[in-house]
Image (cartoon, rainbow, N blue to C red; front, side, top):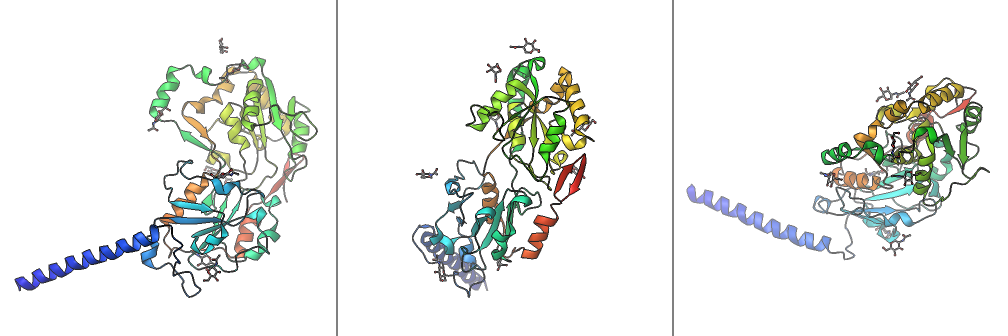
Length: 387
Ligand SMILES: *[C@@H]1O[C@H](CO)[C@@H](O)[C@H](O)[C@H]1NC(C)=O
Ligand SMILES: *[C@@H]1O[C@H](CO)[C@@H](O)[C@H](O)[C@H]1NC(C)=O
Ligand SMILES: *[C@@H]1O[C@H](CO)[C@@H](O)[C@H](O)[C@H]1NC(C)=O
Ligand SMILES: *[C@@H]1O[C@H](CO)[C@@H](O)[C@H](O)[C@H]1NC(C)=O
Ligand SMILES: *[C@@H]1O[C@H](CO)[C@@H](O)[C@H](O)[C@H]1NC(C)=O
Ligand SMILES: *[C@@H]1O[C@H](CO)[C@@H](O)[C@H](O)[C@H]1NC(C)=O
Ligand SMILES: *[C@@H]1O[C@H](CO)[C@@H](O)[C@H](O)[C@H]1NC(C)=O
Ligand SMILES: *[C@@H]1O[C@H](CO)[C@@H](O)[C@H](O)[C@H]1NC(C)=O
């Protein structure tokens, strides 16, 4: 009885040692960067066999350029400080059969230039930061039901891409702020010396009709306009951040007006203004109260007319205390603008989600979600008209 138990234990140990040896050989084979032909790449495989699903690297293939530029394949997850960096980002289509995720940028997707197969283990993602007004459906129609993930500014995307974010300052930084004069960190040019509002615009006629709103606004307060709509240029235009910094010394408010009023649509303008200490005045379809600290922005669409907004801006600008209220958040938060930070989330999600956890969007549902649920609107004579 006793000896048979010993035999059993011995056998078990042997099994463990043997299997770990086998595992090791598996690892050394797959982690070396040889052109190992992965056996699950064939139409008969519907999933990655479990021994391969333990592979430590995930491959992300950028099938399209990003607005005609292939620069985005140079993203480094290390440089972005991603918590998980075990993903390889490539634009090399020869890696298609090794890719866990294939990303298509909406505006660069072309019906005649798509992969000919979609292996079942592989995810395809649709990436887009433009509003529905600027995403032609023809580009993606041929992808049909093949989209597994959406990567967009919509908060209900599979991967949500914010243009920037508020990061809580850590304790030692908080102490540093208390020690240095808060006013020194912001620019101390007295508000009485500053001009009221500035707007940078290069898209002159937009689906949101922001241009008419600003025309109305200018009847009541001065708004200095920069950009390529036949107005002044902001020097130096490059880099944009330098331009914003110089504006922050001259102005109190920045009109961060979006070209489209659609669900969740907000761009980097907001974060750039906040970063340099301009008070952003928003005109957009995003629900800012859900992701910005209170008193960090003014919502133009919160007012019944441009005249009402003008009155409010005048009131704030004349009272130092009110302006300071709008800078209170800087004591506890700072702004982080990291383009392509969403690759961190993508890499993490690829590692986290098991292959069984599959989901995909039918074209019909994707269409309804993107175009119809966006509920895009247009400002016409103080009324938001659905378009
Ligand atoms: C991308 O990275 C490669 C190698 O690091 C470099 O040679 C190339 O200039 C980079 N391309 C761009 C567009 O930044
Ligand atoms: C991927 O695998 C399929 C099926 O084995 C093959 O027909 C195709 O040529 C491969 N594609 C690439 C880019 O290697
Ligand atoms: C907190 O902020 C200080 C000053 O910027 C920095 O040196 C430190 O590394 C930060 N600590 C943590 C835990 O992030
Ligand atoms: C504040 O503004 C002054 C004058 O416009 C400028 O010279 C100075 O560099 C600014 N300080 C900071 C911290 O931005
Ligand atoms: C900063 O602003 C305060 C209050 O407006 C003023 O008293 C002080 O002189 C300013 N400091 C500088 C360096 O301009
Ligand atoms: C906006 O966000 C707030 C806070 O998350 C929420 O209470 C409110 O219902 C949202 N409004 C809309 C229109 O979605
Ligand atoms: C909305 O308007 C009121 C004044 O009518 C103002 O107190 C409030 O701060 C505004 N909120 C935003 C987010 O603009
Ligand atoms: C992605 O979607 C395709 C097409 O619907 C499906 O065949 C495939 O199994 C999905 N992939 C994953 C990993 O969910």
